[in-house]
Image (cartoon, rainbow, N blue to C red; front, side, top):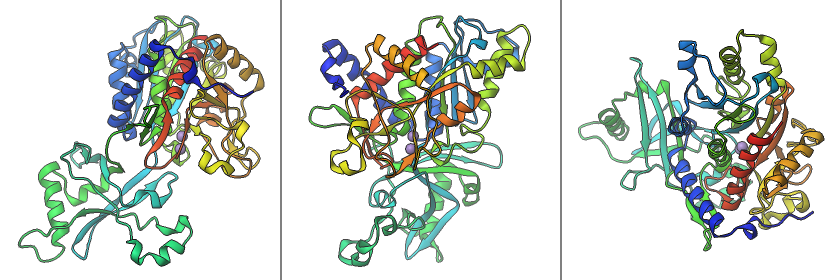
Length: 462
Ligand code: MN
Ligand code: MN
């Protein structure tokens, strides 16, 4: 049951389309390094494609009809796009869902200090990271500072070529005998991930003069006081753009493929739908997956259900709770999240015939979880049977996958949360190498097949 490498299927036209898509995706990665930035990108793309804000329709009590396209944003960190279909919502909708938060280093609320003529920001990392990967590399700072007067200051430092960058230092190898003998997980500590912000004292200042100059610059450039950091969300992420990888340019090296590659594939797939799809189609981009889908913008919150309720209200003559529940229960979903690609350098972590291979297309994980499938959504065989047909009828290169060997580790996605409604859900994604590293690797063919697969699913699932 070995699957063919997808590149073998492509003629010149397909190769051109694949390259154009990869180029658009790299731009999405470069412009969307935080969940907020990804929402902005998604809104711009949606509006360009004729979507309007659901909130406006709700305010106006405007009836929605088949073919209408609306989007709904939750706290600027998660977003849903809906393209209304010919069938009533009660018949269920077709959903592709991904997450747009990625592992990173967050700045603490009381971050700034000076030590021995260096100014620092104290941090608390976000999501699962190998801490040693985040030192001695150029970092950029992205995020917002909410001031007391209600204004929001947006910050991006370190992405333009003439911008300064930030960095966490590492101990020189000459003095690292003790550090090198430690376990990799302990070589760099969480509290050790403090970011260098400055190294020059403010003239005329006696105490903490380096910190004072850094604060002066923040104040002059952004109008921010030290206290404003109490209401800031600043994320340190790898600086720089995503790049083609390999002499053949077949892959992309970049920050945040997990899970922006699936998020972007969904956004592209939504553009490939007919004017009036059979069933209502939804692209759902959630926040906070990397820390357990918690909080008001994580998948466990109710924004999706609330948006569906608004849709029921605006498409039916009378709002009905029962119609809402039926709509949710009868839905079909691809929980789109990256999977671990088979890595020949770490072969012992994988069981090869059930591993996702880079370049062999979009992958489907019947289950995720760890240690006996714990915490997993386990997709129904019947649903997978229907899915196989959609994939094959649409000539998609696809493969099945499991995240590594049994009992070696595991992971979760948003699948099990949506499954609570009783809808059919399966995990689907793009295989990634070096997942959660500052720079991750995907194969362009898998992105290309994911777009086709998600479009086919949205169009044909029932
Ligand atoms: Mn993920
Ligand atoms: Mn992840």
